[in-house]
Length: 184
Image (cartoon, rainbow, N blue to C red; front, top):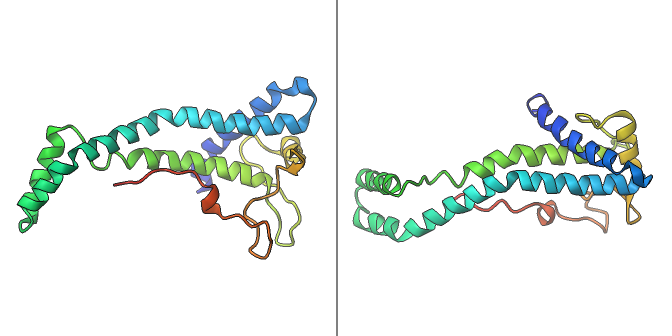
């Protein structure tokens, strides 16, 4: 999977390093990395707005068709073939596709996976718990070491939120994950 997503790792790390370098005038590595990561997430969200809008429009179109779909299901409840044909005709008539609301989610997934992988590489540790950051894209060498040491309000950026279950600070990944919507 890493080979396929390498261009995305490179793009994500390049944006983060670019924001880091733009803030070099502050002479504050912690601020540079913190704002760089925040700006990276904002840029990714802005880039994904068109996909999100397309997903919302598609979901609304399907919601508007729901009463018609129920009618067809009721009318042809015993004939699955005819029901499918009528549903396809309805979709064609209203220029909508039931899978159109799923495509934007699928398209966003690799981008969020690349973001997670690059940021998680900063926090990588060995089995013994020793910090061992993994470089991805342009985030290697001096940049990687600097990012791994940076802090945000006193907390190390490289500390992971996905800690073992024996720790009292354990946070659930589902609590922190973005909401993608549904594929219905």
